[in-house]
Length: 120
Image 1 (spheres, helix red, strand yellow):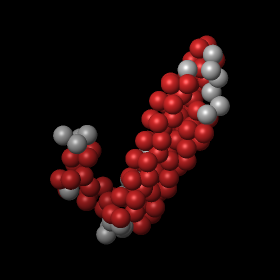
Image 2: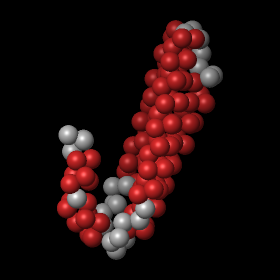
Image 3: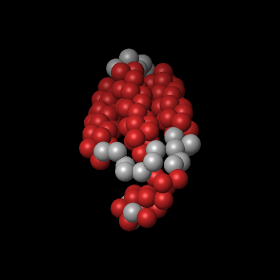
Image 4: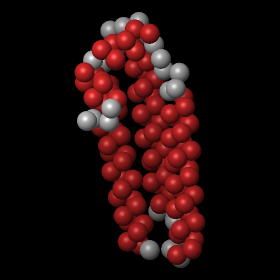
């Protein structure tokens, strides 16, 4: 079980680091030069920070996971559910992030469209 705990801890550590990179990139991108751009940039960066916090919270729980098979399985299932619930709530908080000028600029930008299509 220790190997699995270590693998899960390493995975979550990587997600936290990647999310931190995302926060830094978001902040470096600056504020969109459109009406509502400042509010949108703040909400997006704040959401990324909330994701990082949720992942850090999950990572801390890994150290205290049970070492018996059944306990470990149940605890990791709950951990996955907790992460999903947190990320769903964060995503829902962004669902109203629709700004007329910002949406128009996003839709007109090829880089943004590439991101929206999953990078293909």
